[in-house]
Length: 403
Image (cartoon, rainbow, N blue to C red; front, side, top):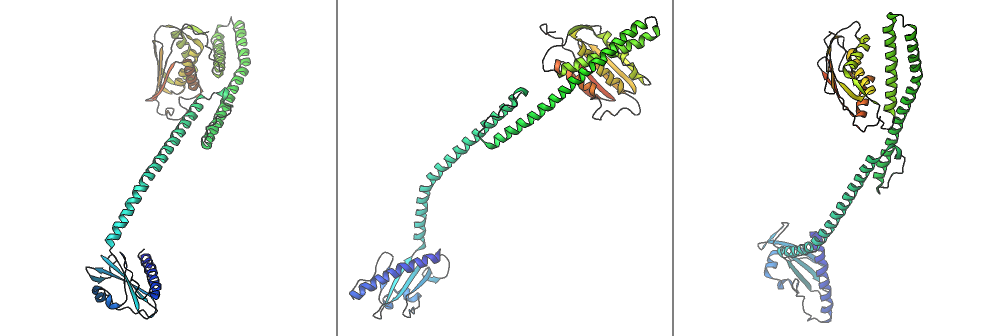
């Protein structure tokens, strides 16, 4: 920057010297340059004494030359930022004389000038920068709220998706990135819907296919009852076959009901809970064969108006699970106030591993979870020391529930 300043001074002083030379050729008495920043002299002796004492006589050799001399407290210095700088141009004239032009600069004046320019520049650019900044702020704020509103719209649209309208066109969210997310959500929802529909279809078909063999079992069970009416020793076995066939029929009907899309209520009947639980304990006696299991019952005598078949399936599956995963120990059954609690404790040396992923989560308890979820009963399944504790609270249906 300083070198550029020196070159600018050279050009400035050279122009003054050339202009004077032209005037001097016309008029030998032409006035020497004398302005606020430039002073001209026609001899070395005419220069101020302090210049003669601090600057050696320049040797022009017929060519203009420029000297820059820095001063601090009147003494020549080579520091970068003096308190005074002298520019001395030596310019040979055609008549043999030499023109000396001096220009003196005080850095403090330059600094003040620069500070004023900087201050003026700030006064000009600050309001413009402030306005531009405010405009950018409001634009960014507007874009942010626009994006947030579109994301909320996307969330509302995803929440409103139903299997029957999942194939409808995706709304336009104006931003390609959000539209892409919406299409991906729709694609995932379609895949999930297809998987659920395939599962329901398989369940319906399987249940329908089971109806025929179950009907055959029941019909032949009734026929065996008639044929073996005189043989008492066959009666218990035939009764178990009939109960098993009836239980399979109930399971099939329940599976069909769970896989259906309608919300029809299963038939509500009055159930003797004490008799039902005792019957189910007897039906699952085969799971206790060869095991040392103590059954503890505390069942209140109570008749409950409830969806009978799901109630029977729930209790039966919980009991079956408890008997199956107990080798030696106890199974406690407690019922009162529409709530049943079944807890098993296995005291054997090598009990069934209760930490495995399938313990307590076989088809039976999965069916229980589906039933209680659809009907609206309260269900809890928790690990205890040596087994599990399962509880169900049966809510009686409202009076206007359809049958």
